[in-house]
Length: 235
Image (cartoon, rainbow, N blue to C red):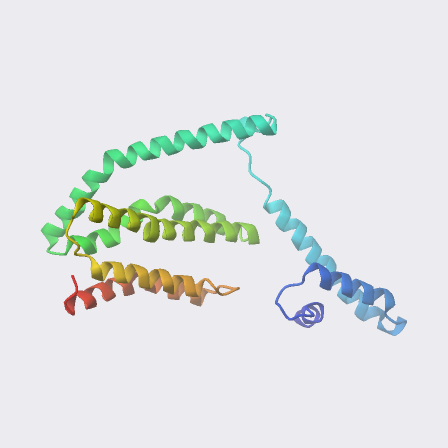
C-alpha cells in the first residue's frame, strides 16, 4: 500500500492533493493494456482515499443541539449567540466571585508548606484557568480528523497567547500606571522564552508525539529557569 501511495504522491508532500489525483486518473486513461492490473490497483487506492475523505467530511458535520435542530439557520444562530453571551456572562461572574478567594488559598498553601506562592500558583492556576480549553481540545482531538485537530491546536494556542501576551500586558500596564514595584524579571523572561520555544515547535508542518513531549517539558523547564534566574540574582 505504501508503494501505491508513493506513486500517487508525486511531489512527495506526504499528502495526495487534487492535482495529483487528476494527473493519475489521466495516466490511467492513457495506460497500455499490459498495465491493466497495476492500473486497477492504483484506481482502487484512489477510490479508498476518496472514501476516507468522504468519511472525514461526514465526521466533521456541524453538531446542532437537538432542541434547535428544527429551527431555521437564522433562528439557530440567534439562539446560539444568546446562549454564548449568557455563558460568558455567567463565567465572568464566577471569575469575579472566586478569583480573589482562590488567590488567598494559593497564598495560604504556600505559607503552610513553605513553598513560594509563585510556584504554587504556577502549578495550580493554569489547571483552574485553562480547564475549559483543555477539555475542549481533548474532545476535538478524539475525533481524529484534520479539522478537529486544527480546532484543538487553535484552542490551545489561543489559551497560551491569551495568558502569555494579553494577561501579561494587562499586568505590566497595572504596574506602570499604579507605580507598583517590579519584582518579576525572572518570571517574565521564562514566559517569553517558553512562548518563543513553543512558537518554534509549531512552525513544523507535521507534529508528532515527540513534539508533544518537547512542548510538555517546557512546563517544568520554565519553573527550573525561574529558579535558576532568581539564584543568579534576578528579582
